[in-house]
Length: 206
Image 1: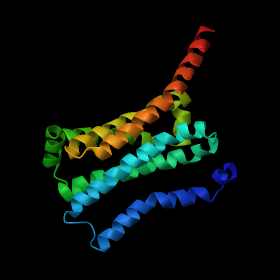
Image 2: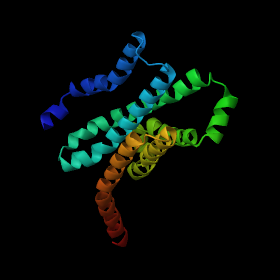
Image 3: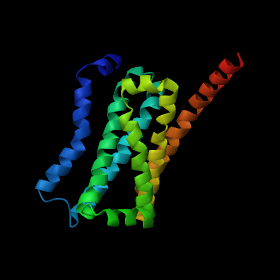
């Protein structure tokens, strides 16, 4: 398993797999299989994959610790950037196909419709994560400051869950599933966060 994760060919394969949802969406569009409301279909599809990639990205750290596979960290940046990529597609669908880039209508929606407000919070939280995901930014910010900044991914994921919950209104099964997965990931992180806090406290007192 460890040798497979270190393979130079695995990252391109994962990259192509991450593009597969977009490829299938485009294929369905060419085949006329986007349903009676194509804009709604595209919006939901890109939103779902944004949430899925956010949760997959968040799962990398606990899974690598539990499975004792540190090389999984190689894929975290790529997966995080794909969550931002699908988030951009989700936002662009709304801005272009739904609002036709009308600033007045877009602003009115952000202010008046709470599910769009939550979605915008989630997207804005992803922007600094995407732009500071490189090794250069880790050096500029310092490891600890970079880690603090990148906790915004939890804000983005939580806002995404709220956005989805407020959107669907009645059938909440999928947002509830996402909320449950996010809660589990937060619980898995808790013991490690406590150990880090204890180490920092010990270092400070020493």
